[in-house]
Image (tube, rainbow, N blue to C red):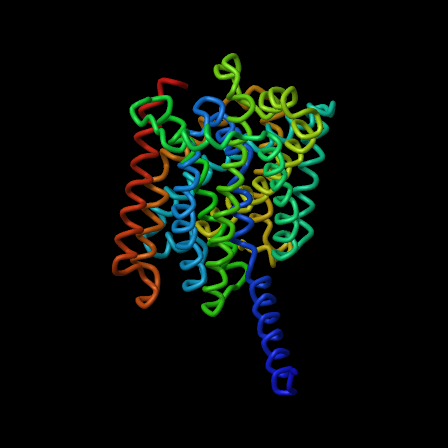
Length: 425
């Protein structure tokens, strides 16, 4: 028999639980959006190439990169919440204008490379369905401009999450590929670290996980969303969940490629420089529906959410360094430089891909470039965590040593792998 007191306790408990979920949904966004953007078109191609060339031998790396991704992006959350400033602004205030321009210049280079991969992927999917490149790029450009120019931060965030959820289609592709458990287990146990081709893809996978624009975006998004110290715990959960989803998507693409294309000797040496290459090889094995339609929708979602995040990161970063207004809460007429940088990035990326379509061959090279920039990117991030945060929130104790050690190891492995395999370009 349920007493009145028991019923009241149960009701209060459900209210607390409901209140907790409501609070999480309010805070959630920056971490999930940036992680959905992390598995962009370049990352998809890198994961697929990894599965084709090395089977499951790069799958363990995807798992190992989950905590690395979380640790890096958690620092951006911490910096954004406890300083209230974006990444570029914080570097400028802490280390001066010169170092701020060094950081944002790297962001600019990464932005160009990323947008080329996003637009080339979207255009490639359009061509698979008979849509001319100029038409698909025009539609995407108008959509991306409309999302940001007509909305607040929260609206942009909702649209980005909705687009990014299309990436869940990659789990369907992996499931339909029917990977063999025994082969998968054997691949997990083998990592040929002396092979330069393997190390090159290790570097590409690291560069596909930690990118300059991710750090700029999440810290600026946290500041623009006006998250407060009381939101810190929930913001960390947002980042943790996103980290798991991002690497799970990478793993799904790798498994699908390894279980299908990677099984044939002829395909092992095939070029997978574009989404079209991958799709054409998946269709004979998985059929048109899964191989083309489902994989295509996943790619479009990945490309669009990444294009939004990359362009906004660039607009925020340059705004924070130069001092012009840089918030989605401002009307375009109130922050013309901010919206102008965003528009130039989107329109410029679309034009480049339309005029020079063979740039898709640079996809994996772009990820390696990101890996080569890690010493600067992680160096600034860790230095800020020690110097710019309030004393009670700075890195200290064993966790500080873990962050420093992880950063050195990740950056070192990325640079070593990239330089070792540079002759493969």
